[in-house]
Length: 226
View 1: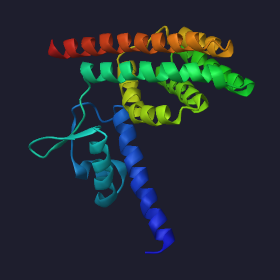
View 2: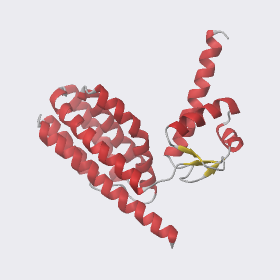
View 3: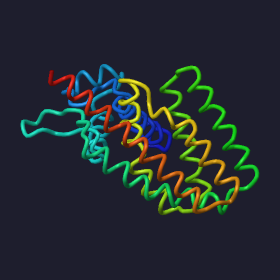
């Protein structure tokens, strides 16, 4: 197999993986939904080989679950998991914000302010999914400028699971309505080089988002039981 063919095959595998993962994150494939290879192949317009490799990767990442009967389903949305994810994020990202306050350049501050403007604008428009996306861009940028490479690697393992919960919750109502002001306060602490203040502000922000997520998920579960 020549280099060009190998590159094309790798691209096909990666594209299939990312496309399938995005459909799970966006709840186009809903939590607990049973899925079949042939249907997924048709949905994505791919052959079985790259699809099976994508499925294996997503099983390893716990976005897909193989049931005892061999059937495949989308991973559940649970209170226990969302609590664990957001509590871990609060600890990691608090320290990341602290270090971002230490290392941020004036150009970084300018870039973060531009991100805050996009967050505010999407909030005013009621574009909840854009609001979530811009919020994650803000968090991702702080990770990059914190210079905490190991923290960033660990956080990346949680990122898409956290994003899935945020998108899921937003589909069933507004996201944390205080998040707009909370992001702005985090930026203020970073711009002021207040390392401890930035750490506390980030922790408070993520725990506030956790409260919103837990309340919303409980409400969804109660409504379905009724």
